[in-house]
Image (cartoon, rainbow, N blue to C red; front, side):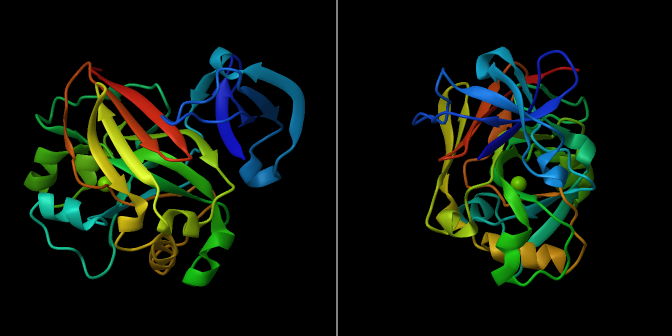
Length: 269
Ligand code: MG
């Protein structure tokens, strides 16, 4: 099931998106979104007698992280190498504030403090219930679903600061969407799903989730051994090789096979 958050100009609602995705991760033009009563994270899936054509609604970030977005650095060997880094011996964790989250179609704002703003297309895991010290074999039980993320990074500030808070923490630096797919399990990603980023239509990242150094159950176990995870918290699983700069006016699309495509443009505030 694909769960989105949307507005028709009124208060935001959650909804279930129907229809198939094409090979580029775009939904069938006939797709509709069936509205739900409340947030399915907390009240389950309760269909309302209200549906809209997908093209008639504006999609919003499909989840509002309750407390945090946990990023994982250097989780693809080829990306670690392109940045001149070794592969870590255990997951490299950092935080993005929940205020960095934006939805599909929302602008990524180019801050005046950087001259080198990068995209990082990533698979995002959405946590479904409060948990800590989750054994890897029980990770599936605490995962609500999967979406697409862009771990936007001011690369010059990351190097300058020697840590990631400023470089990855600006408002709008965590596009998420277009929806949460709830019918997959971590094994589906271990077998390999493509993670692709296009910049202005050009393919710039072309990875596969089978190349994750630390797989999803390992990440859930690791992160939850440090901090309690809450419903709606997000874990970004790392980016494949091919990161690079974006400029004002650029359009960046991150696609994951079977999940869809997340599109945003870069703008000045
Ligand atoms: Mg990243």
